[in-house]
Length: 156
Ligand code: FES
Ligand code: FES
Image (cartoon, rainbow, N blue to C red; front, side):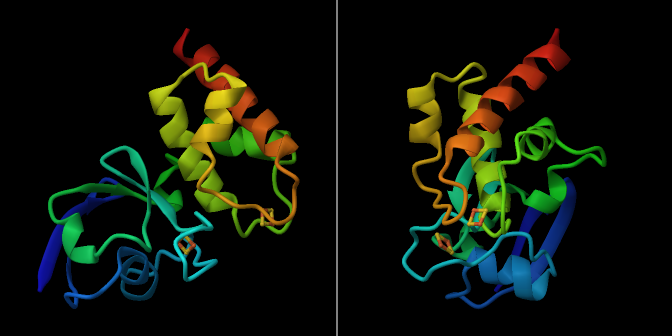
């Protein structure tokens, strides 16, 4: 079947199988390998992308369900300047191996869309679907706080 959606601001049509997962179509057919596959149990969150602005694990969504949706991957987060969340993750040293980072960043963008000034509880809840095996999370939480500040400054 053919599925059409907006991908990182551009119209996109792609032929997919009925059982194709969005993450596989993004990575294998469209060459966007920033959404990582870190598990086969829908738990790691490394594959998180934005679907109509909401963070979604792209391994849990059939590509056919993307019809008419607005999809943003980590490749589309920068414009081309780094997104403030990317800047904050860099400045706060919130990554080590980096495998979880694209998913963490997309989940953070989604979180800050819902909660521009998140409490620590909202940060923990917002990233609860994303697993990092390296950092211990403290630097990631710092980065989310810092990103919120950077984005507030940019709005003022
Ligand atoms: Fe682990 Fe999608 S690959 S949640
Ligand atoms: Fe290695 Fe998060 S930085 S898994």
